[in-house]
Image 1 (cartoon, rainbow, N blue to C red):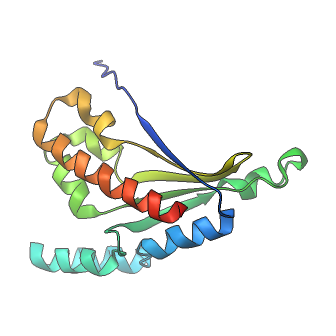
Image 2 (image 1 turned 135 degrees about the horizontal axis):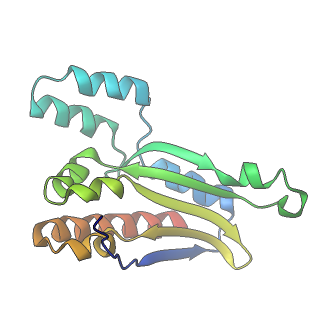
Image 3 (image 1 turned 45 degrees about the horizontal axis):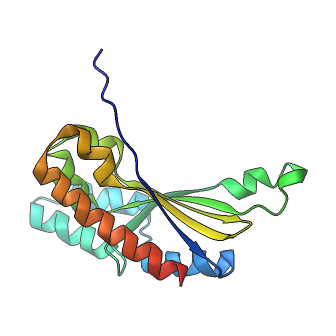
Length: 164
């Protein structure tokens, strides 16, 4: 079995704003389609242009939509010593960007959509993201890396805006 070694770069932005305010700002910047309806709409499209229109209708101002989220803090709060811990993992993306990477590097489908972790720590609220460029660099496809760099830039802007 072949094994590909990856070098990972994690981007983390720290905010002094309250956790709930950071999450609210982040949520306002991404689309929130009803995923059951979204899948039905995607399946019913006949052309690429129709599919693009469905995707664009689901995206927020930064060009991303929420696929799902995991409230890690709700689980941790059940254990008394972590009672005040807040942590949410968002899975976000843009199917059109994912397509561009996956058609060049099929393994990119393992990394997209992307994960954004927003969690409360002693020094503030952290918004963390594993950079796509670092995940795809081992594959050596320059076109995929260009798309990954553009994605990373969009995510970095989203995190910076959400933190302030």
